[in-house]
Image (cartoon, rainbow, N blue to C red; front, top):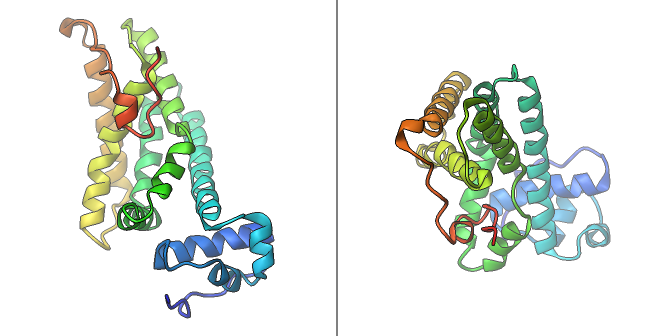
Length: 233
């Protein structure tokens, strides 16, 4: 059984939030298998009955933890979009910076390690991620790309899928480097420069009308990219 003695007890707060706080720590430190509802209750300072009153089982609790993290990022993305000066490139830079900061954070990287370690034994965790639907970031980026297309006079087929491609291009390399280089946090200045450069390169490629019409998204791409929207029929 996992040892949780090194984890500090939570201060009193709303019981549901206390349970979620405890679950985050235990899932990330012990993984899905070694985290029990009993341990979550003990670490949250509530009864097991209270935990089950809010979450029917451990999978439902895991989903709630994931949803709460996504909601926090959604709010940050909306703030970033509103804080931009109205230029699509500036807005895209602000948005992708928030994505890079969130997805290269120690907590998010710990979550990725849990998912990689547990996904073969627990495919239901991956299915839970799929059922959460398309992340809000795809909608925010797609709206920005639509605006840029109008401003610069190019046609963008399927903005949501192009948004999904952009997010993966912007974040995947940083995530991989951060996973390999344990303990090396990336500073704000580096991430901001990377966000600005990535946004500029991507938008200039879309605006290059000399290259002809932009290619259509391959059939089935939405099935391969688990968070991408399904292809419209």
